[in-house]
Length: 191
Image (tube, rainbow, N blue to C red; front, side, top):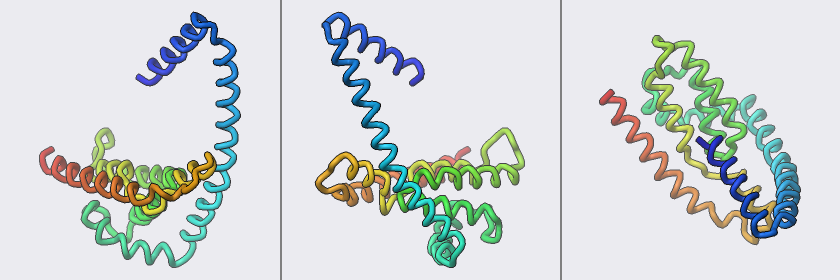
């Protein structure tokens, strides 16, 4: 759907600019936007590299074991058919930790590994298991304690207080995670 909407917006913008004699403004905005996008990408690259490195170090230390112990009761409730000894348990834990730290870029490959591991154990390969569905819900509506990507974006765009939105992010992500997991648990019982 977005493949249709965005080109329509772009075409309408160009037609409007031509009809109003503002083609030069469109050209200037295109080049300014690409410059801003490159600058933002470069500034985010450092943050992403830093936190991905920290996650790699954490995965090789006892930190993950301690965080896993903290998350274990939650994971048991959300994924009752996954045993603690299984590799997928660690992958889910690492994904949740990355999401909690606001590292969506680090969480994505971990989430893909967890889904592949769950799919291997899935009896019906053409249908999501309850654990897979719950993992998608938890991953999408994850709680973020440190929204590092948002802070980095706000900082790179010159915000006076890039961390001012942390408490609203906590409230929003906690509410989203609770609503999503409760809804998923209720729907799993029904279907």
